Image 1 (tube, rainbow, N blue to C red):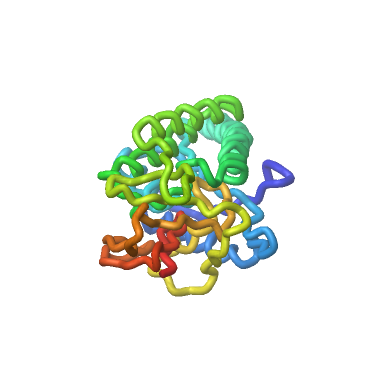
Image 2: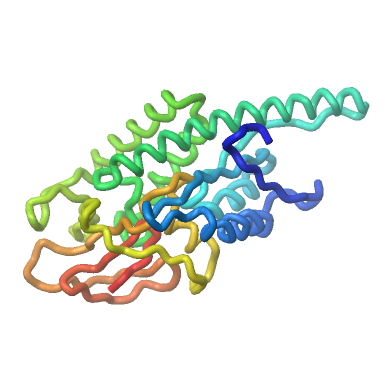
Length: 277
């Protein structure tokens, strides 16, 4: 244990094996198995933040490994080289690794604190919770969220993480500013001019999906955390158009193809892209 309020999970890996999507699945399965024990049904929040600290080795395989956790778990890379041929050189390198892991754990906890505060206090106004697949932006939103993930994972402390997050918000809102829609409320609108209206604390009635039924672990995990930090699992957007007509457009669930859906007059879409018609 490196901290009294941190829990660590790891899996053995041969030097030949290296990082891979298959190795990431072990962590995803472990995170998923803990959902029911860590979920507080009164607050609709998970009791923990989650991150994966890994050694950067190969650009292609590192990217494949990281992608498996997006957008639910925060991947934090470190740079470290094994020691030389002698046992003394190896001991020095191992000591350096342990020190690096201690520092990185403390730094990661500070980063997650910033993200958790944003999701807890600014849920109705932050772009962090928009659904990656259903907010139509010609790929801008997904790329923006990945860039934020990469940048904030390198933050030195809580202050720098806050600065990075604030700059990212400003960048997103310069492209997609919140506008007045139905009910004269400020909301995000995608390229189709579909309004993603946050319902507010008193109107959150979505239910978290704890049971099996998804095709991958990340579908489950994305319903509870964004970039490693927990959000209210009942949070969802009312996707609608400022029109007396019912909403009719192409949407997709957290997995699967796009299909034409009709709102009555709106669709409930969670940050995980889970849709309750």
